[in-house]
Every structure is written in structure tokens, then in C-alpha cells.
Image (cartoon, rainbow, N blue to C red):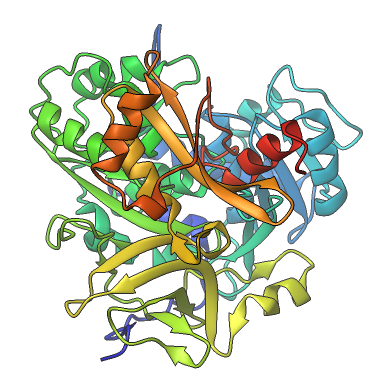
Length: 504
């Protein structure tokens, strides 16, 4: 039996189509319902569906007075209400928004501008302005009350927005998504979230990230639910109280956020149904801690900027222990070898069929690099996994992160799970580092809540790892390198260590 799950059919996006119109399709019916609440230390700002739709279409009018359809507009607005309204306003008008992290350095931002060639840059208050910053941040709110534009309908396959990859496989790269990308997210409603119209989805992430943008904003609005977003002044230890105070029914975040918030006291949250995690694999200890302290389940998903999530656990289809879950209904996914799908039980590269409506149009102005990611009709993710007879998928890490120890291939995740099993270790990363020319060993890097005796740590690891998987080096750090989307950057960690130790 091959590691292949073929879709039983998922209707394509309607033609003509506009992503913003789809996201706000319930706005007239639910006009008085809260669509968005941004929660800060000193209170919260709430916006109902009537207001959001009016502001989006007013913003579309304002943007069209400055730029033309199909031109690009940079949005670097942080977790402010201006961001989702400007993002959807641009898409409603047929303008292509480019979502950027507020954490970019000046040099990084300048490189983005060279690549994107935007017609307009809209940056948050206090950010350095440029010649293309024709619209001050404060002016965005004046757009909200302008006459409402009409939604610009067109081919569902035309470009809608651009977002940057997390950079885990190298430098962050601009990814072009079509209007149809939002249509594919319907597969997550039952295939991951268990999402309902009466839900109050709270997401602790940055708006510029596809995870927050999709799971935290557009998916709740597409079904008529409420989006709850913590403001930039909220610390992770305040999140549990926010969940309780604002009656969150679903809570989504990256594993690192869960690790930090679970250090706080967890109040009783009777309306919370479950947690949702994505961005990287969650350590088993963090999952167990969440489930013990909240009394709710945790459902994880695997995805990437090029296709969002497509493998997940769900309330109606929980993941067997140790697995990442199942291919979402409606997707066609295979684990590929050189000659096609591998037999079940063997490790292969996770691949998504080109017919998936959520798959990117391509990397911006990089046709050769885009084509290189395909093997015939399959988009190759670069991530490894195995599939059992039931179709449950066990993630094995990125192909370029695999470590070699005495001829044995070792997955970083195995070592990281063993490290985080120690009660004092908060987070960990494993990679192969070069200690002298041609000689690599496994190094375990970790962040701990207190000083750890190395002998005790090695004893803990020995109970969980075969000898050849044991790290030769154990290195305590104050923090681990992460990208703008909070993903662990093992390549950076390896490069930093080798540079310091003369093995660059």
C-alpha cells in the first residue's frame, strides 16, 4: 500500500471570485456581532461585522485613489485593527498587499522594497518612512468612512496577496497566493479546528504570519465567528486570564507561546473547547501540561507558507500517539521517493498535488526556483514523514536538518523530545555541528529554567535515546534563534556555533 491519500473531491472556488468578498460574506447577516476584538492591558477595541465590511470597502476606495489594481502595497502595521482592514481592503480592490513583520531591521526592510517594488508603503506609527510612504498611518482610519467601493471580482487563480516564508530553509522568500487560497481553508474547519459560527477564536500571533492571518482572522470571519487577538503589550503569562475574561472557545498559538503561558496559573475556563498548535512540532511534555491544566485536548497541524496547513488532528479525528494526524479531507498528499509515493511505513518527502487550491502560485519573480520545488505534478515540501496503514502521519523533520551519527540518520526531533523531557528544560534544538574538518557530531542546545548538572541530563537522555543518538555536546543557551514567525532556525544555530569554534 502506497503512502498516498487522494481527495474524494473538493469543489473549486466559484468563478468569478474575490477573497475579501468571500471572507465577509456573512457580514450583512451578522451585522451587530463582534467580528474582531483586540485585547490590551488597558482594555480592548471591538469592531462588529457591519463596521468591518464598511471600513474594508472604504479602505478599498481610499487605496484606489493612490494606486492601481494589480499594483503592490506593503503593509507593516503590527497587531493593529488597521492591518486586517487594509489587507482585505486592498484585496477587495484588486490591489496586492504584501504583509511584513514589524521585527524587520532597516536593512531587511530595504531588501524587501527592492524585491517587491511596491507602489505604496504603509507602515505603523513610528516606523521610518520612505518616498513611497504617501499614506501616513493615521490616514488609514480616515479611509474607513469613505464611500464604499465594489468588490473587484475576477479569476480565482489571479494573485491576491504576497507573504514571506519563515526562512527556516534559508532566506525568507516572497510567496504569491491566489484569491482561491482562502477557499482551500474550508478544509481546516472540520479537518483541524472543529470551527463553528458561535466560536470565539483567540490567536496569540503576529498578523503578518499566515498562521495568524488565516486561523486567527480570515477563517473565523469566513464562518461568522469572532476573532480575539492579544495586543502587542500582552505578555504570554497574561493569556490565560484573557482566555477566561473574553470567553475564548478555541485558543491557537505556536508551541513556544504555549510553553510560556503554561508557566502562569491557569484559571477555570469553562467555555474553552480545545487548543490549536502549528508552526513547529509541539513537545509531548507541553501537550501533556496543557491537557492536564486546562482539561481540554490539543490538536496540532502541519503546514507551510506555500500551502498553509494540510495535515492535522481534529476533534472528530484525533491523532494517534506520536503522530501528526491525518491528511485533511479534500487534500491530495503523498510521501514521495525518487520514483513516486513510497510504501506505507517508509519515510518519504511530504508532497502536495498541484491541484490543491491552497497551493501558492509561486515564488515572486522566481520561475526557476518555483519549478525546482516540483517533482512532476507534486510540490515537494522538503519535510520528511512516514504514513501507517490507517493514514496517520509521523513527522520526521526537514530533509536538510537530518543528522548523521556513525552512518545512522537521526532526526533532530527525537533528540529534542528527549531533552525537553527533563523537567528544567524549557526548549531545545539539536543539529549536527562540525568539530573538525569532515567530522560532525550531534549537539544538543537547550534553554533551562535553572542550572542543570550535565551528568543528570545525560542520565535522563540515556533513558530515552540509543547510544548513537546521544548528543556529544550539550550547550546551555539563554535563547534559541527563531525567525520572524517564531520558527526554530537550526541552520542559524549550527552556523553560530561553528563560527565561534572556528569551523565555519
